[in-house]
Length: 115
Length: 117
Image 1: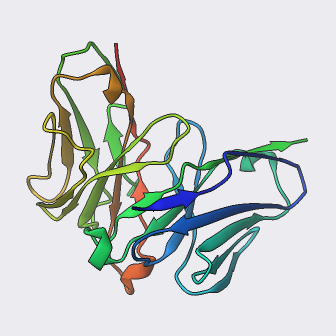
Image 2: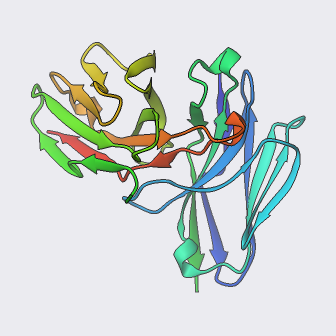
């Protein structure tokens, strides 16, 4: 089976840094994605990792350790507009996943940024 | 191009009725996905098209669900004899392979929120 775990909710303060963790146990791995989803809106792509290490993109960074089945999303200089759900998703390799581009999502982490 | 479009945004229906949703992907994208999302959960994969061919269906997709992509462009998702458990957000996503497949991104539409009374 496929299992992706992330915290249900987090709270942080405007201007601070927050780290959202994601652990996964999947049969096959072909990349890890982070999406942001505001209430009632479409998930929007934030970042992806396919190799171990840190990928930085402005205020957002994502880290991957394939041996540990672990990733995190780091948000710096938090703004009120960053209040949203953050979805961790694993792409399964074709051998295990069937459709080559299918993403398996975690339940999402609802981040509340407070003034 | 304004991205992935879904219609309608909201649908309220009575149990037992049939409903149909439409998705227009980004024009050059040949891959199209349907996902379902309930409150507080992440999207769950339903089905996948490459061009007009439906290449995979999730076990979540019962016989009451059918999806088509007749000309390899827009897609429809039909639910027959709706049940209250079908109430969810139905998301469509599209993609096109450019370079390494591992980093191919899905672009999502805003979804159709279905409420079955």
